[in-house]
Length: 494
Image (cartoon, rainbow, N blue to C red; front, side, top):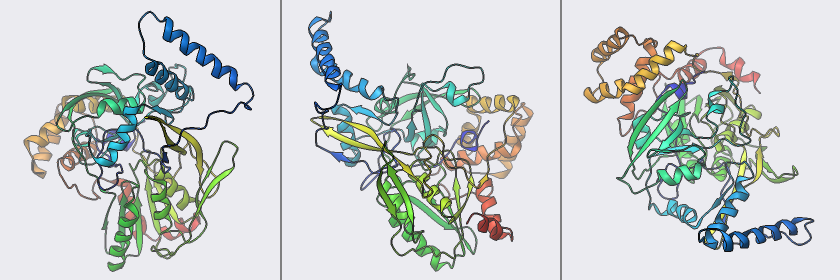
C-alpha cells in the first residue's frame, strides 16, 4: 500500500539546534532530552556475578590480536571496534558507540560548522526478518536506512526525496548495513560540495539524485487562520523555541477570535522532550503528560501539567498525524488522545517510544537507550505508534498505477515541466496533464496535479503554510469543524 507521504514527493520536517538550525542529514533525534556529560561510564563492579570472566576474556583477545595479527593494527582501532560491537549486539538503532569524530560532530551541531542535504533518517531496530515472499516493503529493505522526511527548503526536499524512501547507495557505495550514524557521516560535508544519493521507493521506484550540501536553517512552527473561526498550527520541530512559537501563535489566534484549532504534526520527527512537555502544558491543565520507565518498569520521571493553559478548554482541537510523526510528536499525540483533549485524524504514527542518553568519556562517548516513555494511560508506543481516532490514508495504487508513478519519477517529467514553466499556469498545467494521459500515464488526474503543485511548492523559498486544494486530510478536518457532526465526534473521545 502506498501512503500519501510516499506518493507525494514532499513532506515538511525539521530538526533542532540552539540559535540556528543547521542540518547534516543525520540520524533520528530522540524524544528525550539528550544528557551530555563528560563523566566516565560506570564500570561493572567485581560483585557482578560472572562479569569478570567476560572482561578478562576481552582483555586476552585484545592483547592476542594486537600482538599476533598478520598486519600491524593500532590499539585504538581494536578498542573502537570492540566498543562498537557492544552496542551493535543490542540490535537497537538508537544505541551506538561514538568515536571522537562523532563527538566532535555533536559539538558542531551547536556551532554550525557543517553542512548536509537536509533530511531526517532512521534505521529499523530488532532482529532482521527472515525472507518471505509476503514481506512488506519495509521488511524487504530492513538492512537500509529509511528517510523519515526531508526538511522543507533543503536540497533533499527540493530534489523530491520523500518520507518512506530507503537509501540504497551514497556516492556509488552500497548503503546496505549502514547505521543511521554511518549514513549521516557520509552525507555530511562542506556546504557547496556534492553527494550522489540513490533511493528506492515503495513500488520499486529507484532514482539517483545529485545533491549539493548546504547550511540549513529551519523554523519550528507555522500558523494561520483557515477561515474566520478555525486556527491552524503546524508544529514542524520540537526545539527550545517551539513553546515560544506556540505562545506567539495562540496570541495571534486569540486576536482573530478563533473558535476551533487544528494542530498538525504530520512529518514532525521529534526533538526535545522538554520542548514537547512545555508545549503540551500550554494545552492541558492537569494530569500526566508523559512518564519514563526503566527496564524494571520503575517510573523514572513523571511529567505533569502544572500551569495555566493558553488554549482554552472551550476550544475543540483536531490533531493531524501521519507515519512521519515520531518521538516527541507522539508524546503530544498520546497526551491529547488519552486525555480526550483532541480528536486525532490521519495515519498511525512512527512508533519511536524510547529515551536515549549521550555520555562522553575521554574523547569518545556513546548514545544508549536507557528507558521508554509512556502515555497518560500507561501505553508505550515503541515500534507500534499511536492510531488516530479516524484513519485517513490514500487508496492503494494498482500495479499499473505504480508503474506510471515510477515512470514519472524516473523520467523526471514533472520537475522538467516546472523548470520550463516557473510560474504556475492553469492552462499550461491542463495541457501537460493531458499530454501525460495521452502518453499512457494511468494515475488519476488529481494525483498528477497534486504532484505538480508539490513540485511548484518545492521551488519556493517560502512555500504556503497549507494547501486546502490538495491536502485532503486538512480539508476534511476543516469541514468537520464546519459541520454539525463534530461535537458528537469530539464528545465521543472524551
